Every structure is written in structure tokens, then in C-alpha cells.
Length: 296
Image 1 (spheres, rainbow, N blue to C red):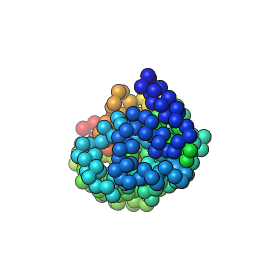
Image 2: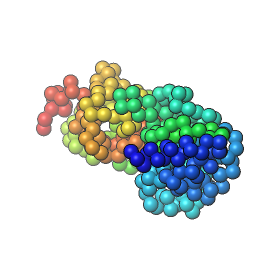
Image 3: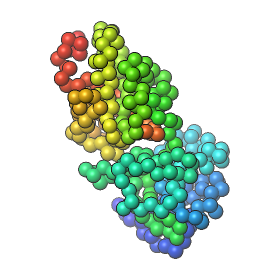
Image 4: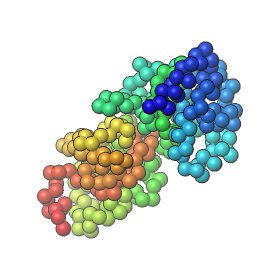
């Protein structure tokens, strides 16, 4: 708490300066400042009106070392990532709304989410830890994770992951591609191994029953954006399937569960929501006693 207080105090102590000068006043933002200077963005951010979502040194330290090294040697790629943290407008906390999307200097949008139950506000899933740090030409909001521009829509994310090829095939078979192109979705994505755990008999039953396959796949989709920062223990999320069945979320320490499935990779940002990879296929409670999904 003391370090957080000192960060806030340091930033607020230099009102009357531009955004870059305010960032320079904080030791916890030294990595960001160094990279902004390396990318040749310091002068541009010192004039005009902007809002910067500013990752701390600790946020940059969480990046894979090879990615950070690559960005440090590729000025164009570095500039694109940094521009993704800059909105060409003055945005304060009071302006934020859930699922709002903001244009960035990188040309792509960032998504805001407001989770009232734990008072978290995120941008592309990154927690905003300090708001409304004022400069002469805009505002700074401090975030705990570096944001990387999404590599496409949810369907693109699934199509680009070899371990999700069975899911992609089933989504196509169930004619759900267009549904997954909607905005503001959360997909709990079972891996190929997760489908294999169902057993050949269950997989055959699903492939021969398109309506049931569609229902099971829709049960993996939540019609709003739920990053891990917004998930909490014993939360119930209603899904896209026609019965609006619920997924029960478990959260213990750093582990997140959807029903009995473990989230193995969380917070894969997409242009239209977020993907969490899971290790088991989710089945609505009402199907647990059926001959298809009964105990083997």
C-alpha cells in the first residue's frame, strides 16, 4: 500500500506538466518512459490531447523476456504496442461505461469493462489501479498488465490455435461461426484433449445430433465480456444456449474454474470479446444423467 500511495503522490505532485513529464516523475513508470522515448513518441504525446493507459514497471516485467527483447529491437512493433495504450481523447473514470470501446492511436480499439461486485475496472482485461492522473494535455490511468493488440475475432483466435482445432470443426458443423462474430462475448474454449476426454461414444453422439452439439457449444459462450479480473468464486454466468443454463465459476488463488474445468489460459483478448482455454468440455447440469453424458 505504501508503494501505491507513493506512486499516486508522485504523479499528482507534478500537475502543470504534459503527459510524458508526469510519467517521468514516477519511478514506477520508468520502463514505459524509456520505451516511449525509444519509439520516438515522446514529442507527440507531449502535445495534443490524449489518455494514456500506463503499464507499470511490474507490468512490463510480466511480459515474456523474448517478447520484450523483440519489442526493444523492433521500433515499429514497439510503437504499435505503445500506441495501443493511447486514446486520442480526454477520458476520465466518470466517462467509463461497461463494454465501451475506445479508439487508439494504433488504429484498433480497447474495451472497458466495469465489474461492480469487486469494484474493478479493466481495459482489455488489465486492471486499472489508479485513475484520473491529470496532465496539461490529458489523463493517465495506471494499469497492471501490458496490453497487446488482439490477433482478430474470437473465431480468428480459435482458428489460429492448433489445440482448438476440434472446437473450430464443431463450431463450423453447428453453424455457429456467425454467432461467435457478435460483440462482447466470452468463450470458454475446450482443447482437443478436452473433447477427447468425452470418449468416442459421446463424440459420435454429438456429431450425429447437430441440435445437441449446438446446445453444448452455446453453453460455452457467455453473452458479455468476462475477463479474469471480473470473475469471482461461486459466481454464476448465464450462457448463450436456449435454456440460459449457468456456468459456476470457482476462483481460488490464481486458479479459475468453470464448473469442474480448469482455465488453463485466461484472458486471450479478441476484437469482439475474450477467450479462456479450458481442459474439459462443459455440460449443462440437466444433461449429466443422460445416456450420452452419463458416467462411463
